[in-house]
Length: 236
Image 1: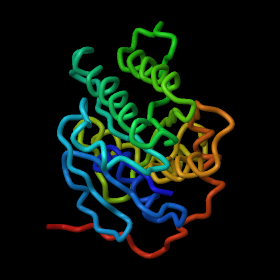
Image 2: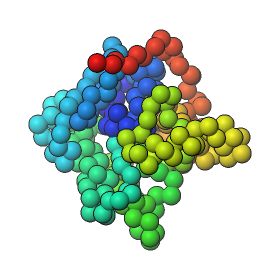
Image 3: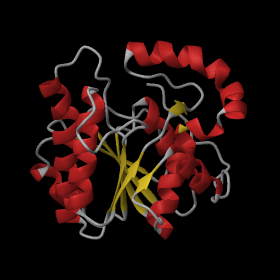
Image 4: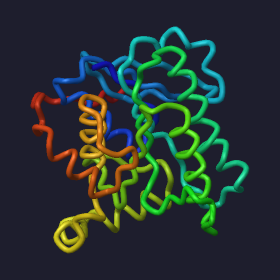
């Protein structure tokens, strides 16, 4: 499988990328972003792109892919709804449309979140916007899958770009083993999220909206670390 990853430098995307590089079913990964991933691997290609509302200039580079793992996102803290909507609605819809034009059969896996509200009734701005995004993607293609993780433990050694999230995960990470024991359906890891996406592209899924429990169950069906060799980080 050839996979495209958006947001590969973020806390979630780094783990998803790592899962792709370690899985034998994935033969090539194209990381699309504004900044380099800092990783080197025989399967990894990178595409620098600035305007996430228009992919016309790189359309030809998006052809021939089997799946897209859309992990790009931002915290709604301190953002107006208009600004948050650009990142959380306009960006993924533009990416999905460009990818479907270039690779018509592609599966589009979108990282949403537990608490997303597709009805538009919630007072939580982020949940309402992400719900609209889910609805639009589901209407756009039958090969769209929404992933709603709860608490996500990051790949060891990675940090979130948002300071608030980084501080939150510094607190939560030591508690992760306890949370897994008392509430396993509410926590997953960024690598298990990636593994669940790989499995969904390869075999399909019985539902198009996957909860945290679905993510863990799907990830568990894949062999662990099929590529046990290291996937080194490059430090300039």
